Length: 380
View 1 (tube, rainbow, N blue to C red):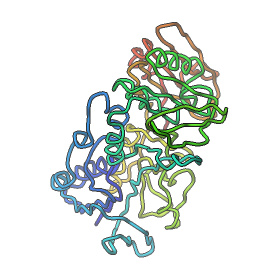
View 2: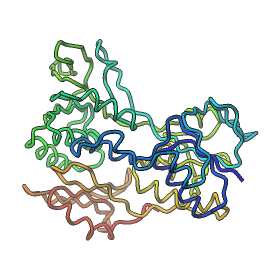
View 3: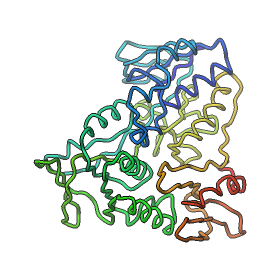
View 4: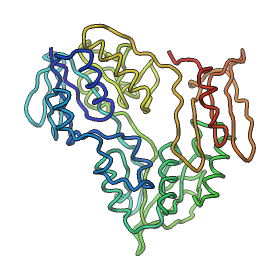
């Protein structure tokens, strides 16, 4: 039985390793639009300060990994259509048959509808090739505008700061990380990063970007202008769902999967940034990938195994403001209990019965992660 995986990110290669352990003789094929080299995508947003190049971020070349895992690798190959009825894929290298198909497609960066002759020059970093371009364009520059004050935007801003590049961070929200932190946590992070030199321009959107002699002039919704030598967009990701949708699979925010990671087609699975779990959750983090990959490998090997999501605190890579978050589920009843001083913020989200349902730990309080994490409930 052949298992074909589309994609070559952390989700795809983690599943390959787990499936090879579960089924040593399984036939596995990996199809990827790039060269398939294995690297850790989360490292892209904190690689500058440590001097990492795109080449040095590669942990294992694709050819070597394919040989180690006994995988048929179809690199630089684009999948254009899925035919679920005949279990075939249309690819740039011809038609391919599969018995079981796994979508590990990842996500695309969201592009803002910007005006101006510099709008097309805005860059995003979503993969190794993007990072290589970013490093090249950044060379010799000291002033960067970051669009987005979410997790990735804050991480890049802090990393650029550590690489002696000043950043100005724009966001429509009135505070950084509003979806992950209570107001006190956002205020603490904003103050800590501002003290190190990051400029914040919040409560506004960027409407146009024009080329100038020294780089770009950025006009925001207040009418204010800001100059920068490079503009980096980090406003979020959208799961890649077009291929699944055209194949007739159920798609909402992401490709909808059940507790086995199975889509609405019994022979097609999905995991990672393209998948939507539990009817509503898109989880673009490493820990969910690991949990699903281990369970899915068993299922693909013939032993149906439901994935489990324990509490999975996220460490945000902002060294000037150490932060650990485990936000409560959307719409969950409860309230934040916050203790804050100049050294940190300890925010605990508690339910009506006093049970700990979420947390946000910043500064010195981040050291309490190990003690508090075991008190958090599993997602499932």
